[in-house]
Image 1 (tube, helix red, strand yellow):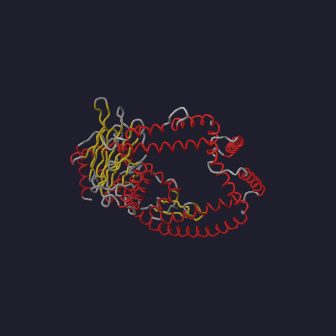
Image 2: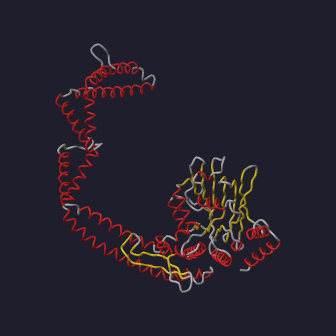
Image 3: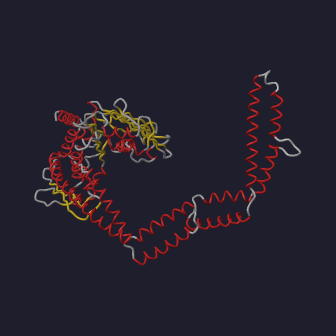
Length: 556
C-alpha cells in the first residue's frame, strides 16, 4: 500500500507530506484547490507521462516521492530481475521533473528507466479517473474488461501465439501467389544480379585489402627511400658506423670493468639484447625493402580491381558487405521462387493445420469467456443493487465471428435501466451517474481478482447524489476493508466514510497561490462536511447535520 507521499514544487503545491492509512483515505476541497494536481503527482510517481508545465513557476524542478509497504510478490520478482530489492519491507519511488522538460526516476535511490517505474506502478496502484468511464462507452474495450475479470491472459496469450503464426504463413502464401509473369520477371532480374556479383568472385573485406596494397604501391619510391635510410642508420654504410656497431663499441668499453662493478655486468647483458633486437629490425627492414619492387602489371590490376569493386558497391552497396548480402538474399529469394509451387503446397497444408488449431483455441477461449460472463453478470448485478441500481439488468452480448487477435468473440455490455426494457448499449441509455456506478461495480469485481493493494478513485461520484452517493461511500468503505482506497470526492456522503480525511486547500500567500494538503481532526472534519453540504455559509444546522452524518458513518 501507499504509506507516504511527498510533493515539492508541483504546480501550486509548494510542499506537501501526506501520510495514508491502509483503509479509506478521502480528499476533499473546493473546486480548483488542487485535487487534480495531487492525482497528477501520484500518476508521475507511477511512471505515467507528465509535462514540464507541471513544475511550479520560478523553480527548477518538481520532486515527487512515495513509500510503499506490503509490496506484492510479483512486484518483488520484477524488482529482483533489475537488481533491486524491497528494503526493510519498504519500497521507495522518486520522480524528478525538470523545468527544461527532463525527467529522472529512482527506485530505492537508484536511477531507473521510466518504463520500469511504470511497470512497478501498475503492480502497486490502480487509478480510476473520470476518463475511465469512456471505456464503458467504447464496446471494443468491453472484451478487455471481461478478460481481466476472467483471468484469461494465459489462454489469450497462447491463442495469440498461434494466431500470429497463422498470419505469418498466410503472408508467405500471398507472396508466393504473385502473378506468374511478375514472378518470372523477378526471377530473371535476380539471375542478373547473382551473375553480375558472382562473376567478380568477391572476397570478404577485399576492397580494404586492395586499398591498402594500392596505397603501398603508389608510395613505393618514398617508402623505399625511407626504409633504406632507416636501415643505413641502424646497420651503417661504407662511410659511417651504424647503431649496431656503436652498441658493440659501447659494450666493449664497460665490459672490461664489469668484474669491478657488478652492476655493469647487467648493463652489458642489456646492451647485448639491444644489439640482437636492432639487428633483427635491420633484417626485417631489408626484407620489406625487397618486397617494394612494384610489378607494373600488378599495379594495373589493383587499379582495375579497385574500380570494379567501386562500381559494384555503388550499384548494390554502399559497402562491400552490403553487396555480399545482396548476393546471399538474391540467391535465397531465387530458391524460394523456383521452388514456390512445392513450397506453396507445403504452406497451404500448414495453414490448414494451424487454422484448425487456432479455431479450436478460439472456441475454448470463447467457452471460457461465456462461463466467466455468467459469474461476471451475477457479481456486477449484485454490486449495482447495492449501489442503488436494483432494477438494472446487465447483459454480456457475445457474438462469434471471424478470427481476430482477441479470438472469435465480439463482446459488448448491454444494460436495461428499468424493468421491462430491452437491454441496449451503454452509450445510448446510461447517464453520467449510472456510468460512474457501473464502473465502480466493475472495478470492485475485477479488483477481487488481482493483487494490487491500492485503488484510487478520482471523482467516482460524478453525476450522483443522495442515496446513490451514500451507497457509493458504503461500497468504498467496504472495499477498504480488504485493500487501501484513495478517493477524491465532492460529496459529503462519501467524505464521511473516510478513515483518513485529507483537506486540499488553496490560499494566496505573498502574491503567490499556495495549495496545502493536511489531515483533518474530528472537529475540522465536521466543518468540512458542513462546507461541502452548504458552501461557505456554514450554519449551526449544517454543523448538526454534518455531525449526524459522521456519527452514522462511524456506526455503519
